[in-house]
Length: 112
Image (cartoon, rainbow, N blue to C red; front, side, top):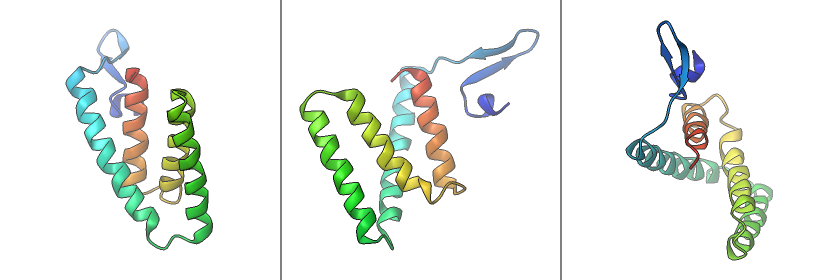
């Protein structure tokens, strides 16, 4: 039921669960919402943040820039995910944290 609620599977009577295939429009819409959530998380993370956290994010960002320049997409996205998990980490039970995890899960499942 959780996977169905997140849009990853569809429950079909007499057949069971079927993996959903999001349309290009669904992926576009998910990406727009995810971008807004990530921007909000960044704003929230910056309020009341200490210098140590800011330094950690700066190091991760510098590593992301190097990975991007080298064309290393896998490392780039792994580092990007770490930054966003850090942003949402303190808000694990918050609406933005739950929504972010749901949307990123749906995008990963779509293969984008």
